[in-house]
Length: 106
Length: 114
Image (tube, rainbow over all chains, first blue to last red; front, side):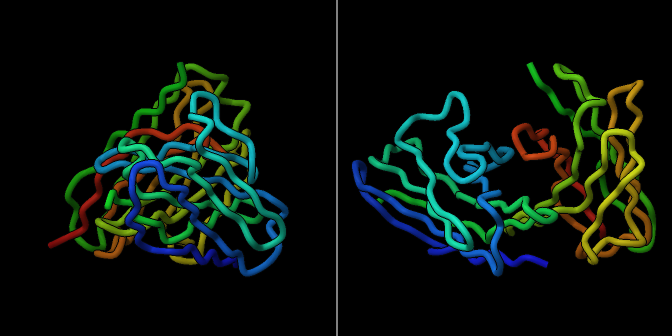
């Protein structure tokens, strides 16, 4: 089974900051990596699919990159509405989620 | 508009069974693999089951294999999850999702407790 290691687990940042969240797979996942945002009491919302494709309707400040086993979600300029928990998901072989990153405003 | 609406959750005793349903609309249901994903309280997400378009192929993680059964009725655009021999660690919000994770339902809570 593929394991996903997500870091950091908690992140405190200021409005306007550049924020990065990382996921490392236990084996090559061929860019089959999605990023999700989940706000309290809501279902997860897909932000990025297949490493770097932006979901329709998602602001362009969100971007994804990576290959092989290492992947990154970047928020170029943090906004107050970005406060949420972020998860990665590999779907190369079954589904495995990262443990999540809770993003708060400093 | 794509909609996925789960139902059937509730409080159930350990060892008992429960069946969840997911009503899909706004897309051609029979063209998509579908999945169930769960989230224990204040925990991360865990994939529970996936089913092929025809229903002929199903996939499960070891944590639920042999206890949970995913099925579908393409004529009714509905997805199901039969959960047997429930354990306290199955307590979670259960989401149905389209394969690839682009659309999710709002989730339904299952609590396994005596």
